[in-house]
Length: 190
Image (tube, rainbow, N blue to C red; front, side, top):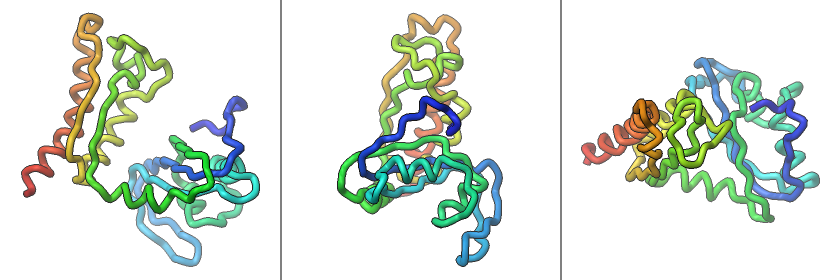
């Protein structure tokens, strides 16, 4: 996520948020007084809230700015990882514990294929210009698969009439395969 964009609008209300961070290489990181900890390359989800003065905007501005002086434990990871996505829920409730509990439950995933960047999958009735590239989605889907909690997968499909070379089908089915492999593995583990 390019945090230098001048058109980035941060919510002014209070609320809860989730940060998706990507660590490109495995590393041992010093986490304050907790010592050095191993972090595998991949994606990390950080849940928090901005309920104090300045609300979500103040908290997210800090998380999206370069780390000069680490304060929270997440600041130490952010020195090496890149924030790739941010989700917010405005309101007075502190939701991060609820969200964390949900993350431990079975995953029912709906894959809306028209979110894929048209550079990879152009055969969509509704193009998502600027959507995520298939190469960026693959490790996310693989990570979901490795959790072993994928219970069901559904998808909305591309427009076969527009897919004259089969490229979009290949991309979508490859991504779906990442999730189905996990669902199949989970089903055979019983």
